[in-house]
Image 1 (spheres, rainbow, N blue to C red):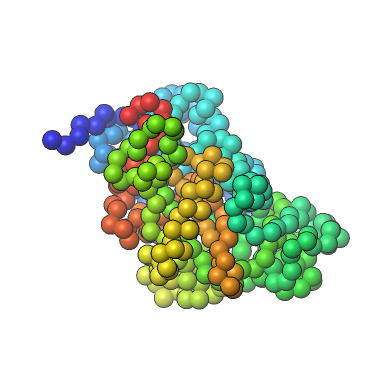
Image 2 (image 1 turned 90 degrees about the vertical axis):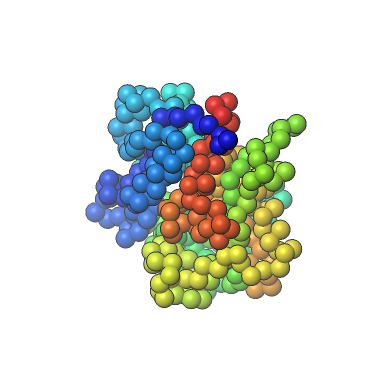
Length: 358
């Protein structure tokens, strides 16, 4: 007989693009990380299909009131937050304060993952392979700041410290001399009002690895055969071919804006055509990177390789996009034959298990 599932009142908490206001001087990609209506509707339909009663809450200044009024059994959190250098931690902090369960990582993990420099320091301290880096805190520092840190040499890559979705990356992000470096750092710090991260430009292949799961405690068995003995289900490795499409060499907001079957889009190659040894390495490193910052339930880790093929951890997303069509983790799941509704259900069930509600 089919498993009988408890019906829960699940609040889908998100910032929808059309509900977020931007300042007059905001960059063109200011809304890139916020969710489309089709993402919210996709998640809600998947929750209905699983027998739950979902409803939507906007993750703005009204949330503290609306979540107390509606008192959901659990929140399905995909909120990016509105402002600040730890904005993805805002909704988890509110829910923690109110004692309301929620999906995905907790407060500190989201705050760390949105800070690329802090994340890389933790990876480095855990002996995980990440490229050397340096941060520049202001436009003034860009002009008259410190010399390059040891281990850095041109060409270099410049991007904002606290943004995702390829924001702040353009055809000037690859810098080949001091003048280009200072100019791009000044532009990033001035435009995004945050530090700039500088690291080697890695000219090799780009991969991303998505997964669901949680680290098993001593004596704990895996939830089902869907998961490995480590407690995770890792989707096939996705390679982003930036040699194709309208935007060459970089994977930024513009590149991500094209329909995945468009000639203007980069190549989405899944499963990636790589040796089994490299696939196993990427999967192992992705989970280790997630565990190093205390991730929960769902994540996606981005890699880039150098010209000689050495792979480095680049970024981690503890709130990976869950658009039913275009999000990287969903592309990877689809390549494996895993339905979108299954991904959403597993994320929820993992959180329910953590809270003793399964």
